[in-house]
Length: 176
Image 1 (cartoon, rainbow, N blue to C red):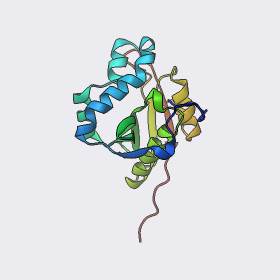
Image 2 (cartoon, rainbow, N blue to C red; image 1 turned 60 degrees about the vertical axis):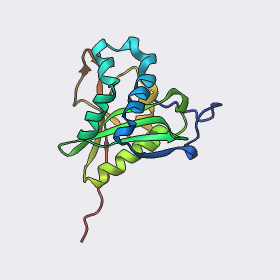
Image 3 (cartoon, rainbow, N blue to C red; image 1 turned 90 degrees about the horizontal axis):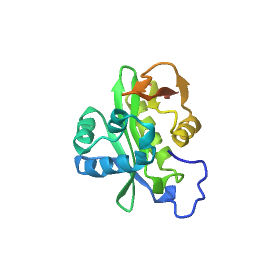
C-alpha cells in the first residue's frame, strides 16, 4: 500500500505516527479507513472479495476477538491498520491498509514491525499474508520488508485472485 517515494508533498512523516493496539472504540474508524484505502481498487475485486476486504464495524469487532489489531495514528486520526491471528505455528497478517493520504510515509512498515514483534513474542516462526496481484504498491512494501511468495494458502477470495506471501520471524531466545 506504500509507494517507494517518501518525498511526496503533503504526506505524513513516520516521525509523527503513533502505532498502538486498537480497542473497540476504534472499530468504526478502522472500518471507514479500510473502505477508503481499497475503494480505488473496487472495480478489480468481485463484490464478495471487496466486501471481505472492507469489513464493517461489527466485523472489525469480531476480528478483535480473534486476534490483535493495531492502528497507526496521526493527530488522533487512523492512518493505517493491521490485524493478526494465530494459525498453527504462523501468524496471519490481515486487514493491512494505509490511508491514501498516509502512503509512502512509513505507516505500513511501522505496522508490519508491530505485527512481527508480536508474532515473535508469541513464539511464532513466520508471518503469512494473502494479497491480490493488483495491489502492486503493497506487494512492493511486503517484498521490501522481507516477504516472499509461497504456493500455500488461498488462491482466490470470492473469485478475486490471491496469492500468499511469507516471512520468517526470529523467535526470542529461550529463557534459562
